[in-house]
Image (spheres, rainbow, N blue to C red):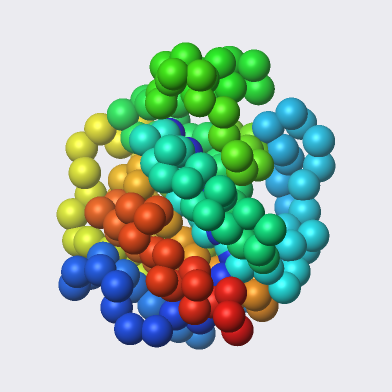
Length: 200
């Protein structure tokens, strides 16, 4: 499963059904103060993307859609980052760069798939060992549904938790968290929002 990340400024009007799009108000701080590591272990800092538009999500099944976004927006200020995560139905058991990339290429989605976006080290997006980036994102934006699905693999449930591995977070050029999408919204379905933000 993957947490996915794309950077953008502001959105207009709801683009999905009720509860599927939650605007993030009064966000404390910005994502540019966070750092992590790429999948290969080298240091990564979010401030290298200042002034860009960004999207973060959790999924293995959305990789094809993310590649399509990466191709559509190649050469623009859109940034897409993927975070492997194993907390939803144990869909990402691999740990090393080689294992994860081989799993993507041959299993999910398979067929020789190669991601066209940067991958970061595996994280926990919920629970006692929640990654700081994901803690900031989830606490600064309302949740997308009341129910927490089965198949979760962590302790200490929280009302702000990522509900399932297809949730996404959209950021503005200022690094502020702007919108949280439920697992029902596909990457392709936020193109209008991305276009709007890129035009800012």
